Image 1 (spheres, one colour):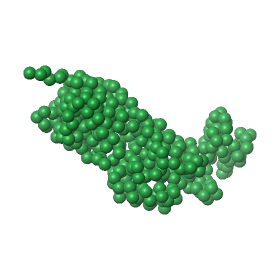
Image 2 (tube, helix red, strand yellow):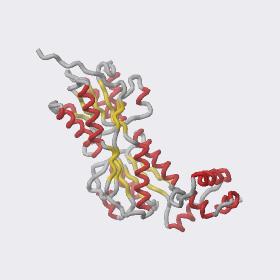
Image 3 (cartoon, helix red, strand yellow):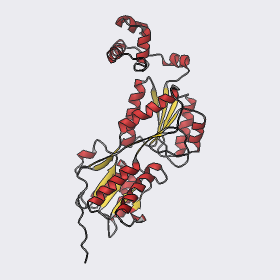
Image 4 (cartoon, one colour):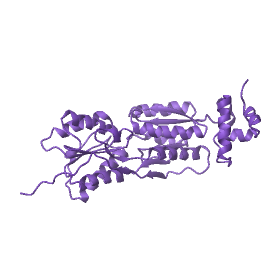
Length: 343
């Protein structure tokens, strides 16, 4: 026998309207108690209720799907934010269609066209960075859109980012406070706001300590592990090698650690490190990594909320952004450097 909303309502002695509102993620909107919500969801699960999304979509003129586009699913940062977004979307009765652009603008543009053909109700995009023409067209078409992590001032839509500048500034300042003066920065993809803001924070911290800036100490071209490995190899091969690394992503830090170990060096005895992004493994490394932590769970929640406001037309679409603070977590990958004695 097919289980319907009426079946669930009859078993619990509530109205079909109440059941419908709970299962469509509208409990808070209609002030349905958490106890009633939990009971209805449990009963629906026990009875094996399967909502007819196609019929619902035709009735409401919605697909109840959201297009989520990210640059690299293998990056734990994106995976953690996606998990938060998916959890919140499910609570609102929405499914996620995920697309990995592999850090290429072409795949990003193709993903947008594919998702438009699927009639998704809104887009959440973590842009590759650089070219924005295809994103501007999407926004101008008045599609519900939220941009996250990397953004452009050309895009007049809501965005959610971390305070990358402040996080980098505090990380570099910590290294300076530990007497490090020869600090290398392995950056992500130049031209993206994420990488550029982190490099700017690094530079401003050096300037505050009157440390001459050296372009030779700012290296790298992507957020990937290979970039961290190659860049660290080159830096460590110099006669006057750095005493500390500021690493602009978690994957960069993995590559830098591998290069360091291959050179027979120890962390932090031979070189101190701070990485952007905290991961579950960071505190369990042989030398727990000092990190700049981003609020991945909160980021996902805010992103989904901003998108649902647009989808539901609860408020006019605005282009203001949300900037989330970061947190420097002190572990054991940084030690005080010995200052060179003047002759």
